[in-house]
Length: 573
Image (cartoon, rainbow, N blue to C red; front, side):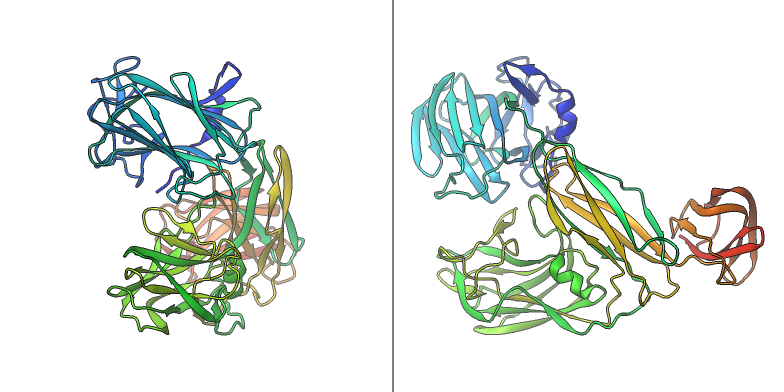
């Protein structure tokens, strides 16, 4: 799994050298030789995200450029450093490599981790081969340390490769290693990989930002739980947030809900982006593939509380073997992808037909992004994956043949072909009592914006309801920010006392906070059956109740204000 470095913390320790700001350096001296590098630091990771195993490199004293250690990359090692997916600015990558005669060295730089290779460099028998949409070759010396210097200007779309202080070539950085170009070039990761017969050493690795200096998008937002009374407070609240980086911050916001114990009037329906099936796509060779549709909040918000009971997929030519259907939750905001499996089912498909697969474990929709798709093995030359004849809806169709998901942009210049994958939903649903505006936007560097939280108590009656505001953004160290929200009916015991009382967290394990807009004289706690548990004197507007030693279950709290009393239920877990 991809991990993003917290670049902001690195910036605080950076220094200025020759009009550069050094983001990260590693001479590999701090690692011991008995443990893998990824198990000793978060700065380096393996391709698959693990810290041990065949992908993980160790340090070695066999060859060093400086000090007594370097990173030795041997067969099957697959090491990754994460640049953070920056999309603007001037960047410099520098490191030293040692490749013995008869061995092969390799690295690549990627626009999007696992799916969009910007360029690849192979070192073999004194020949450096660069693949950047075209193929270029240069000579290099074996059995000695060589310096690789890459200057990447994302603003003018130019990459330059230098070897031992000699400029070899410049080219458009937006190129793809395999040919063509990438519309949104980014500096995402560098990958040191060793295939069969590969072995090389890396030392004194550095990553720097050259003038003008930029800071990646960095969100600042209050995450303190929000509590609101349905009947006494204004129907909306404002939630400000800021971007303290210098790059633009893209964001989206949605609400995910907990069960409010109240049903709405939603009817059975279907989540889909595709139209009528019109065609199918395939590959010349046989592959194990995943195809998925990413149902974002524009779809899930219409079905909150309902369940995905079955999935429809159109299968053209039969795959090799059975198909497994999945429902996943969301992945990263920066690099979207399906992650945790919520439900899965294997079935034998019918060719040239819509197939309906009833899930053994229906998946409840809470307003959060959901991915629906299937795994199959393509027949060589066959066309299995059904598509429609309409322009692809952006950021909805994805494929995976290895570790990372890549967006499918359609067939032909006009981009035709939404995947024929649909989710069938049913159930009464829940009232969506909270909404947020705007739902998406851009915050420029060093600017702020305000989210407006809109509350609607209709259909809720006297229930206490819970939700979470989820803010996603391209802050690479904080893709997702969650703010809990409690919405409850605040009223005195005689239903006329206008006193607001907030209790949180609920359920609780250690303490319950009690907050009121009037001075509390005392609080009494009872079991749900009415047995007295304890009482505390308060004489303040806020207090805490210790529940750590109370048995799990539901309780009633009486909050006393002299002549007025407010009752509230709470749960101890």
